Length: 179
Image (cartoon, rainbow, N blue to C red; front, side, top):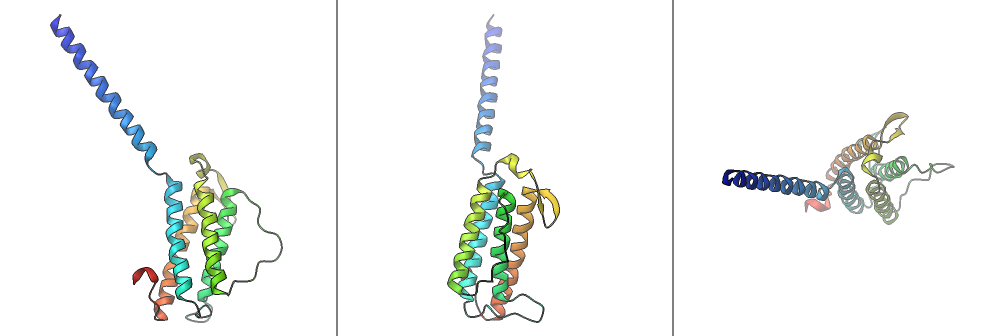
């Protein structure tokens, strides 16, 4: 009889530990940020760096390292355009009609456009559910998921960030976060 009580108590304690551990795992998993949070944070970091570089490169927007290569201002305008395109792709919004807008050349307006485009993108990414990430979309005429579209364009922007850093260094401009 005593052995049965000890065995029952041991089983009960084991079950308690198992349920407590699984509850802790579930709570930890629920509190971990998802891909949406990671992508939105990455967009926030890119925003800070591009806006900072746009401010530091004021007066040099027309500079380019050679023929057939984007200028400083063209790179920043491309980022604004990509953010708008990606925001529309992941939200399902229609592309604007009419002619493509003129490039922004005013430094204050370009910095504001960069900030605004990243804020819109972060909001769109943060609003996605886990199932939304696997929803099909078209980007550059190719079928992919929303998650793939986000990854492709954010990766591309990191490449343009490197390009912009090189442009800054070639103009003896130190990126603001490196000072």
